[in-house]
Image (tube, rainbow, N blue to C red):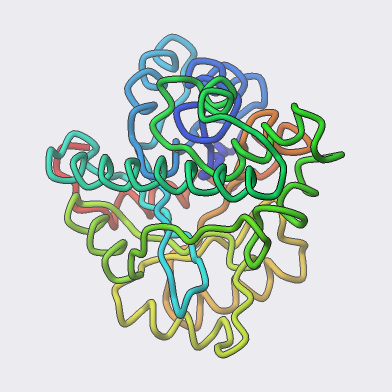
Length: 283
């Protein structure tokens, strides 16, 4: 039987509801042979995931997901087969996490001004006090838990989504800075979920031209939000720009409407090509 992988998975160290141990166990249940742990701005879940996976024959690919901006529009860049022990890299991620916490506090302040009173302690209770990567999904879940919205999606559309009343921009990281961060630790950089990029001034093809010039190496063709037509379009672009192909569920545990882990399974050959492209000698 062909080996398969899910190359986009989050844990509760970031903005999922599943622990690294639960992610590993669930991956086994879903018939996966490998998963990439790609938490936002942190690698803290990689070690416990590797430990949990040892006895159940699941390969853990060390990864990360960074947020960059092009003309005030967010794009996400995945890094695979990174040297997650690198001290300088860890320090940079810690700086990004500190910026995330300050952003979360400012969002709460703006919500309070609109009569929605939520405390930072409430948020930490949702995210976990040791969460290294506070994000808007945590705040959306808190709004839902407190009965301020009917569903998580409404939290984004009504309050904290882009251009919404309580939206606060993230610490600005350019695509080249994110790509170089990944490259400096031997990793392979990949544009995440291209469907979510909706720039008015640039087409996806124009964005890819710029990112290729910045050194990006792959594109996430398969994703739980991509339909077959979109995946075919992204695969065509991958060929046009000589980019590696990846795919993943973008699972956030119960943080979204369903558990997505294993909903996207890509051939293991994609993992092998990522490994070959990595320059991480410690992997």
